[in-house]
Amino acid sequence: MGGLFLAVFAVVPAYPAVPSEMVETAAVSENAATYTVILKEVGPNKVKVVKILRSILGIELKDAYNMVNEVPKVIKENATAEEVETLKSELEAAGASVEIKEE
Image (cartoon, rainbow, N blue to C red; front, side, top):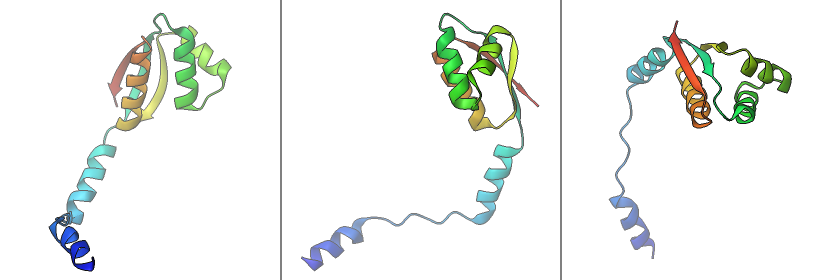
């Protein structure tokens, strides 16, 4: 049984190591730009947009409701690329229109 176990692991290739220069460069390029996310239109699902803003931004119900009622409205400044993608995909799935500006 021990021989079979070793044979299975001998077939699995080892993952190549990534040079540290590549890792540092990737991290810097991701953080090089920040973005501003602007809610342009709410769409038909106002309640859903309010819930999304509350959950992603971690804000109170009143603040999210005010954002939705004051469109076009900046909802996030100095956002990372990951934050932008999350906000954009969630809000557009709810029927809202979002504009992204690179800073």
